[in-house]
Amino acid sequence: MEVVIAPAEELARLAAGAVEGLLRAKPDAVLGLATGSSPLAVYDELARRHKEGLSFARARAFMLDEYVGLPADHPERYRNVIEKEIASRVDFPPDAVQGPDGLAADLPAACAAYEEAIAGAGGVDLQILGIGTDGHIAFNEPGSSLASRTRIKTLTRQTREDNARFFGGSVEDVPRHCLTQGLATIMEARHLVLLATGRAKAEAVHQLVEGPVSAMWPATIMQLHPHATVLVDDAAASRLQLADYYRQTYADKPEWQGL
Image 1 (cartoon, one colour):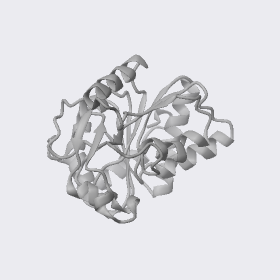
Image 2 (image 1 turned 120 degrees about the vertical axis):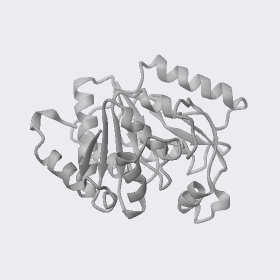
Image 3 (image 1 turned 90 degrees about the vertical axis):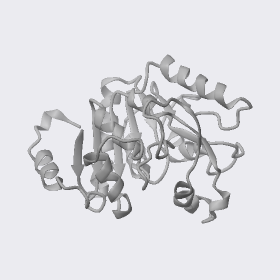
């Protein structure tokens, strides 16, 4: 696992640079897209680079998760959020971005179909991730099986409170259930790029990077991934015991190596 500590704007440029490098080497790459506040600056940077010539015309993308039961036109439905924040701002082909169907009549079948769709696309080449204050990635809440696949999950009160800001501050308006890629599904992506900023994420980042692998902090499974990148600002890195070492390692990194 590589840990990079830098200002938030630099983190966004690094993540976008990893996506650009992948698309230029493999134009038909499969991207994994996350929602929440963490990747927004990355999407802004990718949209800017698209205006300068970066193409998504042969790429495909899969979303991490979706709320269950939100109407198709609800602004916080994750498919609509992704359309607004990135898909409509670049040249993805029609239907190139897929997400789990939170309105399906048969949710378990929809989850199985989503797993099949990811596998049929050849798997995800680069997955963008955020992390919750309780250590969840996607909507894999504490206690999630480390072997989990795409499934329905009940959201914790903490997650719903954290997401209430997107629903006018009302936690009761935040759905109680979601469909989410499982931890094992996420781990099959060939490169994981996680972003975290702010002191509220400091304990989760500490557990992610330096804690034991545990279902109580689901993101810690990333320690077992062969190509995981963690991009954090100073505030999110404030609990890291080896922060100085991570800074030194990145400063001394060979330029050719990339993320």
